Image (cartoon, rainbow over the protein chains, first blue to last red):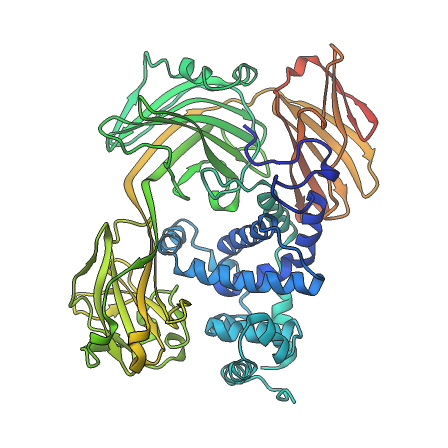
Length: 178
Length: 454
């Protein structure tokens, strides 16, 4: 009946799944390093906690079974940022998930209510997705526009334009990037 | 808005300890076999009946369902479950809760589904999230999982194992298993060629103006959130069907203000469908839409966010419409058929016997304060440093016959939950692959520390 659990013997040396590069311990380390980032991005896109949690699990599962080898921790984080964004975009296109949310909202009326209600966060959520991501990476993660350009595989000029427009929408009071 | 406010707002968005623990469990246990819901652990024991419901509810009298089940599961497991054999028939589908067991905060149930009228029940049977075992949290939170353990080709009968686990003991004696919708005959179409010559599209189609408030909440893209009026193709002036796919069709298509609009009608009765419309450019690259808005059409023909009305989705592409000959219109469709239920059976489930022991076992970063053992699992409760890896404990169960169950044979870590409300408390569970007779248990050893079990 154990369908999923892949740790059977000496856990310390066992790989999580026959095709994974990682041991259980390594997965937990990667998870602890990045779960907050992946969760924030998922919540920004999906706007409800249950779907954000599902997304976090699927995104890390992709990492585990994708046999990705990273050059360093920054590379690891960048991969998870991009994968989170792409995963959430795809989720938003999926019709049955959308219908499910409708039905769930009847069963579980407090989905959105569980989220923090501070005005700033609500304004971020209301931004178009392409602006949310740039704002998040620039103002929270501290990446430069060139680094964001590299991570999102988008021209630096486009990133700057999005950042500028997002600032106007949020009426952010700060100095422009030099 | 100040930059600091923005930073602090992002910084406050964090999963709590319980969420982190639950998600990590799901990652390590993710089961791709049947359902996307995270797995849980077992438990068993008996029960009796009650029944329930529906249009047609039938009490099984001479159904040898339990005997049939015993042929499909290990004899070691059979000793710890009790027959239920409660049936609900609806829409020609028979659901039977054959047997179940319940221990503390865990429940395991064996349920069969059989089509009495056709061939709708197959190996691809799925409920998505439309099922529940009452007493658990909402299924998508990861407390309930289903998996097909057997499919009988001859009788078109699928046997499902439902495993549920609560953070705390299940409340009440009665359990109810309910399935709201059954999905079957799943088909996926990628790069589906829609076959429309984009160079022949109307550049002056009729359209209506809408605002963000008229769209459903999952619409996305730059246009709809600008607060401006957004042109949408006049709804449903075309019926361009997709061969093989009868759950959607193109209801309009054209160029508005230099942007390609593709409007799709969706059959609301089929919720198990995913749709994406995209382009392939001359380089062979997929081009996603820039905006996707979803809406219903009310009686006056205007877009509305009310999902009670016929449902539409419009894909808007901001591409160079002078070069439409360089693009091909493609679709992704994930379809399945759906039968609406519900199927529901309620039954009385008594708690099975468990062994409990309070203790004070220091394992370094954590201290185990309570141990409970049931035939299928061991639970350790205690306190310690949040996030401590408890997956690699060396656990042994020692029995009167000196038979040792240990983590090298058939005890394996299944989950660790960190309970922030209990002040760094944790519950860590370990599955026993071959269920154990509790009357034989003498002691449990954790990392070399022996704890007698009374």
